[in-house]
Length: 188
Image 1 (cartoon, one colour):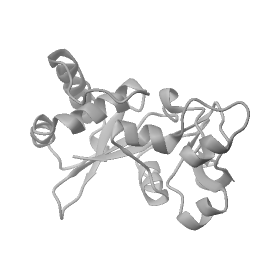
Image 2 (cartoon, rainbow, N blue to C red):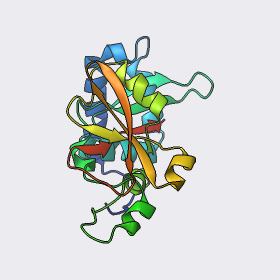
Image 3 (cartoon, rainbow, N blue to C red):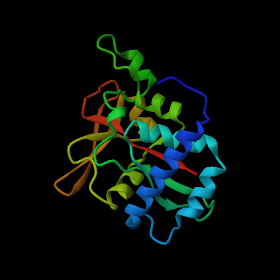
Image 4 (cartoon, rainbow, N blue to C red):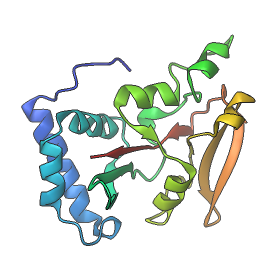
């Protein structure tokens, strides 16, 4: 993914705002007590965050509001696609893992792609919060933020949901699979 100008065209801006509004209205259980007009006002005042949401959408993450930080007033967006976003799969965990591969390197890493998009990988806590809002990753898995002590030893963490249970696993950070991507979060 190339870093690009972080300003959307008027058409792309309207498209993403309409998409987000429709998803917000369709999935009220994810953000009870919140009003779209307040979310839209924040989005309209932050072109860079809207650009990030556009990238989350174009990589099939289906971002939606999942909460609000009462201290900062920021709205929390997570990728809410049923399965790990299709446009963000087959990635190793981070740049160090990518550089360590000698053969069959993936195109990118989850951490680098997230940074290019202006988003963060979900933490284990955030992943579990997401799972409380629906059923996600029943066939796929998603890299999550990995504690530094695990990463220093060459590992990385990922999650999925099977048997109505969220599982946290480990793998070599340089591994990648067609069914593993990453889910992002964004504060607006």
